[in-house]
Image 1 (cartoon, rainbow, N blue to C red):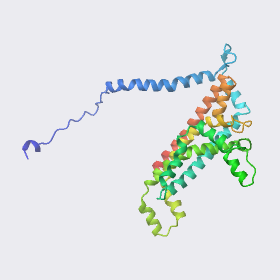
Image 2 (cartoon, helix red, strand yellow):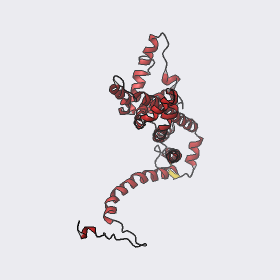
Image 3 (spheres, one colour):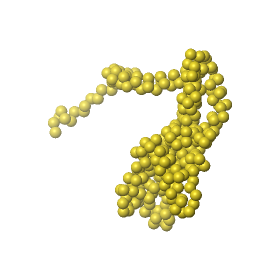
Image 4 (cartoon, rainbow, N blue to C red):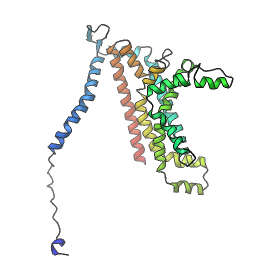
Length: 307
């Protein structure tokens, strides 16, 4: 080895008060995307906030005026507002429970080899590729129809009366449809997370005498806790804005039985042509979504910190 190769290399050390100069070229290249994203988000939100504080109806667009909190007061005093809030919470909670529980059971079931596993996996994730409007039409006309639906045909073969799902159990029908749509998402996240579970833990628990139920409760479920938190956070944000399934099947009825907050905003803003009240509903929906997202992110962060 040469003497030059043995010489220590001097590494320049920045002075304590020195600050790296920003890369102006990098900032310049990022600026268009940041500006477009800023305009994409801020301009519609600013316009919605503006319209929520004025009296503006498309029936009489020439009459405008500052309304203050009048639109918000009218919205909260409307007879359909609180049923919409309750339906939104019930819909979100029921779909979360169904998708997490059934998705966990399916992930455990598919975590073993069996004949036709690939085809069965494709059938489970297939609903994820169907558009919400199409899936709602399929359930409404081919499965839940009280006369010629598959459900009615099955009940008739058993000698039972068919069920008018959207007339007698409208909210349950919507919950079933949306759960069917979101189950593949929960299954994929849980199944992927379950694949990272070390088999040695399960083998050690089995050697210690743990039965399958104890193995599921004390080994598998704690391992899936982080994945379940991700599912709850993502699904909650999307479930707050469910609209296509309700519009396609029940149009918010009968009465207010399936009206959620998103459909209420549509009804006030586009069906009743009241832009001011519809915008106020949109702002309340945004506030509600941000509150829910804040607590979910905080819960997930504490969960990750605890692990």
